[in-house]
Structure formats: structure tokens, C-alpha cells
Length: 330
Image 1 (tube, rainbow, N blue to C red):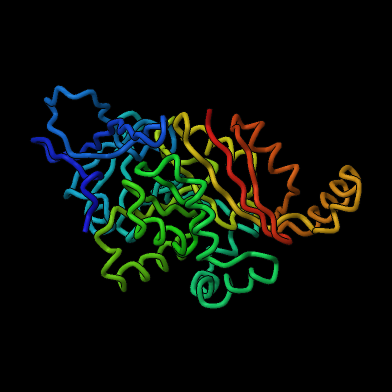
Image 2: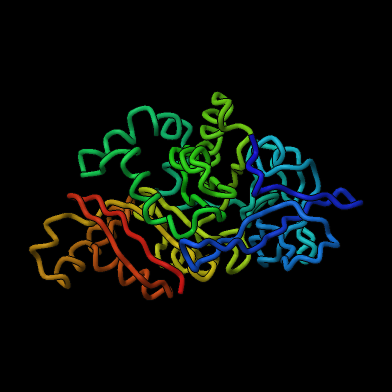
């Protein structure tokens, strides 16, 4: 069942617009954005905006198709950027909002750590044994990690959440089923991970009609307008990003004031705690020149990264090589 706080309206041209309004709460001064159906001539104070933006120019996309922010409705919708005149579709069961979408001659190969998760085999195995091995490094498990993330996200409940590098949608589905958000976007660069996510969704009648969208996009080029998202989650992801600094800068760009970013990752080797920081970083950088599979950072580097990208109120929880951290857009 679709959440009543997150729906769409239709004008005479069958163009769908999202209506974002501010919802106050006696528990917090922060007011998350919610998407709600309102008449176009409504006298209420609203901002008419499409949550998805062109990955090239960041202009909001025009959408045509059936009502709804769920997988079936978005699958039957078309999206177009008026400025770039480029169209985007979800013919592959997910909405492809990458810069390279539609290109016929140009191809782009990403680093090993990115291409690995585009593999059909790895995508299939991710929730069938791959993810379970993370507990050896101190990850408490999906259920506990979800609870920790939900605690960090309490100030922005009721808003729009984007689960970047969502993989097969392990946490995206949990966020959607929680009913704590007006909408959830499961976003990943891997086509096969998104198809796995779709397979899990279609087998669960409690999810298929929830406000959950599947989007293919690059974390370094997020398809959302500035200051349009309330919450961003990146579970076990940062170490896979080609450029963590570009990704966190993008996350900071799309977060609204008061918005929250929560991420988890593998820390750089625990032996780094007993080695002077400069020596350890030099050693790690030398290793990474010959092995580009993962990009693990230290606690200090993650905090520095968040603060340098304009985020505040940094906090974290560490268990062996596992770290979950949170930061907020001022």
C-alpha cells in the first residue's frame, strides 16, 4: 500500500509533479520534506519539484506516466530534461539516470572495485553468503546495522531517503517497510544489483506497492537537485567508491539543511592504530597503487572527509574493522 504522505498529482498533459511541503513536529525543529498530492491551484505554501534531476545539468525532470512512486508506476513512466532535451526510461525495471544512458558508441569502464559488483554472479551471491561474511570484520549484521542507522535518522523521519550504493537493496527494503519515510530511492551503479533488488521486491507483496524507486546512477553524479533530500544512507559502500571525496561532496550537495548522512564501511587495517598516521597512510597508498580493489580509510580520514565536504555533527561507532558514522548538513 502506498503511503498517503507520498503521492503524485496529474495535470491535463498527464505530466506528473511532486509536491513537497514542510511538515512540523513537536519533537524536533527540523522539518523534513514530504511528497504529497495537492491541487496545482492550491493556496498552501508549496514548492513544485520533481525529486529526480538530470545527471548532466541537475535540472528537475519532467515525468509522464501513471500515478505513484513505486516500482510498477515508475517502470511505466518516462522522464525528460527540458534543458538538455534528453529522455530517460525505466525499460530495464529500474530508472537509468547515468550520464552515459542512451549512448550508442561511447563506453566507459570503471575501476575494478566498481566493475566487480556489476557482475551477475556477485550480485546474485551478495545476500546469499557474500554479505554474511562481513561479520568476520566486526559488522553486527543487517538487522542491528539497520537499527543503528534508524537511530541516526530519527531527526529526519517522514522525509525522502536515498540509499546510495544500495546493492541488492538489503537496506532499501528495510527502510521502505519501516514506514518511517515518505519515499525511499534504492540507488546503485550496478545494473545486476538493481535487478536482484527487483527480484526480492516482486517476491514480497508487502513491498511492491510501497514508495520505493529503483534508480541506476553514479554516486559521484547523483540525479537530484541541490538541497532536495532529507536522508542519505551508504551501507558498506565507501570503500568501493572510486573517489570518496567526490561522492561525499555530492551527498552534501543534495542534502537539505538538517539532512543526515549515515554510512558504514571497512576501516583501514586495525594495525594502523598503533602506527603513526603518516607512515601508515604512505604504506597504504603504496599498496593501493598495485591493488585498486578497495579504498579503505581510517577513522580520522572519514571524519576529515565529512567535515571538508561541509557536514557537521560527526559521530561514529566502531567495532573491529566496522565503522558506522553519521554527519549532518548544517
